[in-house]
Length: 185
Image 1: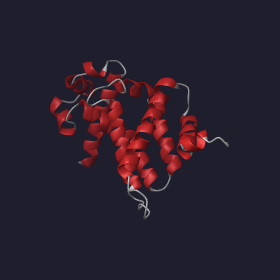
Image 2 (image 1 turned 180 degrees about the horizontal axis):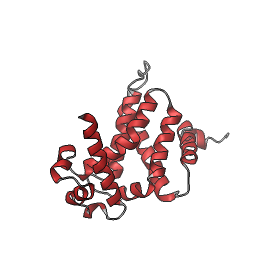
Image 3 (image 1 turned 60 degrees about the vertical axis):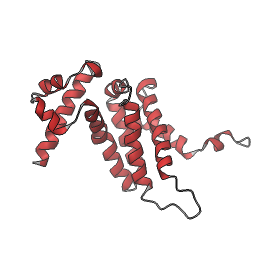
Image 4 (image 1 turned 30 degrees about the vertical axis):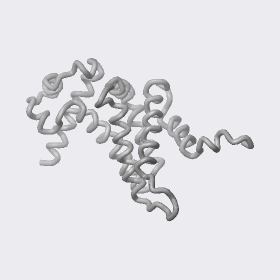
């Protein structure tokens, strides 16, 4: 039963993604999604509250959740590679999702999803005595930075590979602003 539920969600998600490549988000209706997927409207609502929840489910299911699993196993390079490959492979779809603005805008949704992932991962490591416990702030900080890198990737670097952006991102997170502007560098 669970497998059928996942297949149905995937069918709806694929239908939505195909429509997003042709029609702006705000013009896509639930009826259009369900007609395109050859399911009835109640089927959509059995799985998703609205289009915004569907967008969030897609990015979590396809990119963030698999990357999180790799990070949790300590496989940071493969997790980052999966994350960047996901956005590279679906650049046009994600370019259009970034056009979703407002209260449920995609940029903010992506920050929330990434922040949750970072908070879970950072929570696996105890804060050393004497250090400030700023896990939620750190998670949000890194999520915001990663969202901007992803946005750069889909809008400003159409030919950049996942490996190239991963190398640049790795450099950025390995070096603080203080290290980059030190006079004796």
